[in-house]
Length: 174
Image (cartoon, rainbow, N blue to C red):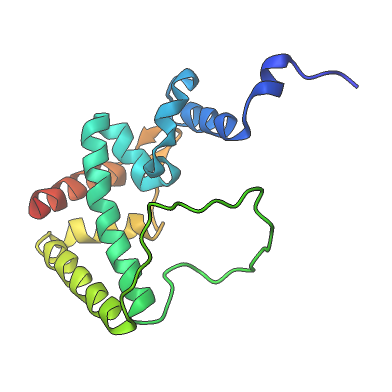
């Protein structure tokens, strides 16, 4: 059996995956650290980083993530439904188990969690409803995976509309 080249043996699997993501997005794979942004794990973040500078993309991603996280939390806490599809659960043992001692436990009772989820979603929905129907539609289409924003590393028309819509939402939030 042939031996693997030394550089392939020493590479961490996560780094290899990030290098592949960089190549798919048309970036230099040597800049794999850029691919560590959580945003680049989904099409919405990928198109924001493809269309904007890193600083602008990080700001726009935080607005988009704030909206989608508030909606998901509202659905989970108040409606008792997940926004994700139900799929088979695969059990596995993690390789390591770590506890972050700096994180504080959530000591709120269920009523406080419910009230906070409603208030946060109402705040985001207020900003969201100030957008045009086209902007609201494209943001929801992308967040639910109903349209393609990038094809072969090129931004589609819907991708450009999405970036514009998130910029408009960011102006309302600021």
